[in-house]
Length: 134
Image (cartoon, rainbow, N blue to C red):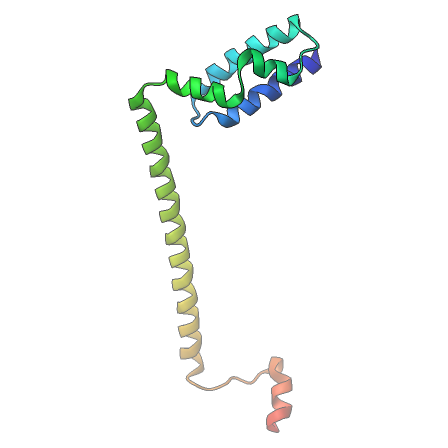
């Protein structure tokens, strides 16, 4: 029985990867499909993945059927929401990179100001002392 459950879960995972949107509707759809596949596998325990695809359809066919059941406005709304998320992520990354660049520029300018145009010779620069005769 565990093997049948694994086979049904693997088939539904492949379908879940093909479905373009998430949410409760997708979850309910996949649960219903997994129950149907589980019942089919209980009746046909030696069924192969190819037989599942013949009976229920390929993951691509099921994704197309899932989308055809959705309202056009809902599809547009979900696509718009996804675009907004992508834009926000890009904006956040841009701000983070800008802040990092500003911090590095500040450190470079502060270091130059602190040195007042002169090299500071310390113990860490011992190899330099030998070269200039100090």
